[in-house]
Length: 107
Length: 283
Length: 161
Image (cartoon, rainbow over all chains, first blue to last red):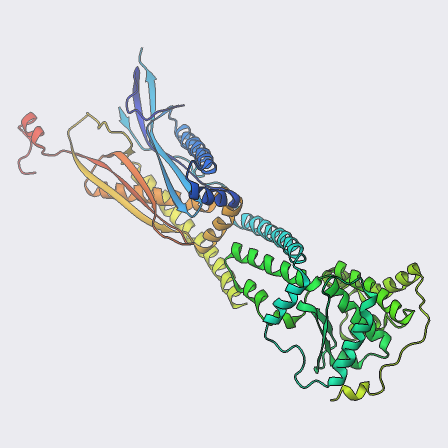
């Protein structure tokens, strides 16, 4: 399964557009991490716990996006976009969407 | 080029979890976490509070402007109780600045307890049930031992620290305020079983030193046992795990074995209460 | 005690009503999605070249609140960390509803496709109770009946249509 945020793939031809596919993941860190993060807010710097959290979420969201694409018979997802939003205090959502397509390589 | 919308199957972006099952697991885990937090904070709070010197504890308790004695309590009974405390004191392994004030409360409550600042409270109904001085001396020595072991302040310290911790986590401040309130001085402290057993041991030794024997020391627990047997039919095993005080019959047995172990005589002449004792406990 | 009863009542009411509304909403979403699959939403910028199209920006928005039960469970999950599953269905419903409303808007314009679809999610309620807004927008591709370019190419087109 190919995933890209390009619209046109070099040396490939899009045969079919299968529509929008999406993946999302909402996660939260345990309360200890939240407390550490609020302390870190005093000093500034990277919130490692949250970087990790969002990375995990991004991976899961991408997996779900690919699962949808695979289920509807696509072999690539193009023009992929990620967005992050805070859904509740301490819980962040990663959302990814793109267009599912069937591609063939040019001869 | 063909453009179409294919329907993706359900359940990819929504995890299959039963909400009620998840709810049950989360609630149980949260309660366990909260209990663990309370236990840790209680332990830490009482350990720290125990290190506060006794004289500061006395000063702190004097800040509570509350009448511990019934205002027009007969002077004789207060004098007698304080005198008994003074006679028992040498038998205890006293801490620095040790000092107790015995207060008499003219209420028909079968109770006596030790509270902050070396204050002991004796209720009329308990005194009325005392058959002889030896029984009363055991109760007195037991409460004095609590003061000597710093049980009230460590109980309060643990209670306050854990209440503040819980209030911080749950966002409810009611418990913390309650722990700080003046009525907590009159409400009686909750001591652990270990505290009670340690106080029993120290008290028995003090009673033995004063009278030369421990005859009659277990009377209070026999009385409590009788009252409990009359009032409710809670099975022994349930009481063993649920109440902070050791079971009365276990305490009687503990006293017997302690006396045997230390070679304290369980035979000896019982000291009578003063002749006018019952007159002092006027209606 | 009254607090506790009120709290339990809110949980029960939240659970039962939340479950009922969610079930009903999903039923309606699935039914309408089948209808609207005739009008594909595509997340690509390059429009089809098979015929001449007019363009129209279309959008659909929806605000969905979580129920009391979900918010409470999400709060507990926040203590331990992990997947906040109660909000997953809320977000899923919000997105699909927003896309459907966008398509409905496009259908009102007699469009064949919606291109370059974009989705925006934001949290609009503060405090313990959560609510999210989802906005879906894109360019509706409407087959041109009488476009300027079509007039040049096909002079025989019905005038004034």
